[in-house]
Length: 322
Image (cartoon, rainbow, N blue to C red; front, side, top):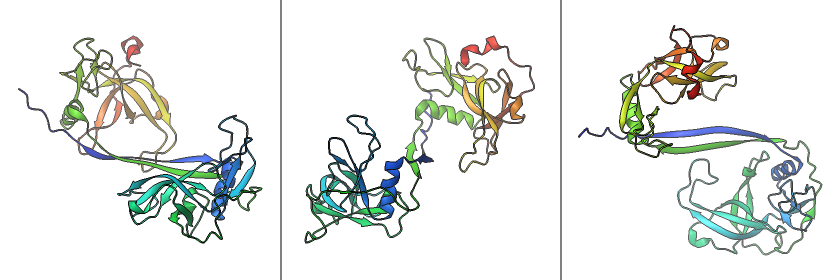
């Protein structure tokens, strides 16, 4: 029996900034937070929505009737977070809470700074703890904190106050960072594939039913639903089937734009994989171009593909792999 290769795993991070412009309601809401004011919007049915939305969720009518609600409120539900993660509002254990602010009919999700889970309950009265420095973002609310005030500055039955939504230097756009940290384990099939790459070999697996060779292998044929255990070495050369020209530089990437990213059908493979094309002007890359791998400095994977110096492949030889 052939021994199984060591199963690999590695920490991975997917991170990108999401930039969006704001409509008049969202702009007023975030600018209001910068000025320590919480704005909601009133629907035609009379409900006050906090956070506000641009359109009525029930009727889809445009909403513009802004009102200011209180900075105190009531916890409607909660969940304890014993191990805060990177980028969360607090570095110490806290509760995620939905808070219905005084004057609002809906609840706002944020963090509650509480000493323990036992100190949190539905119905708990809380107030906003404002951030010391505010820029017009939801993080201008640093968190909520339990509130045992005398009632002079809080009233659950208080009516919201009409607001024009007008501020000096309004916030018109935001950049929301998105990040996912996780550990990836490729499984047996892709582990064999990765081990082969360290030997500068590209190995796929053939489906015993339809005979298609999958590269990278998946352990099973997605079409036939059967296990793929027959290993097949493919390439190293291949054919460009389709491609695109990249004109936007990726964050933290050392590759200068423009460059070409292509689907490459390696010789003997049943479908194309993707890779970068270099060693040729970007405007000379074409369908049918024959290419070969250029390995990374450590020899662990193909860094990119370059022209192989062969005549272009005939369209009929790769049309089913596009």
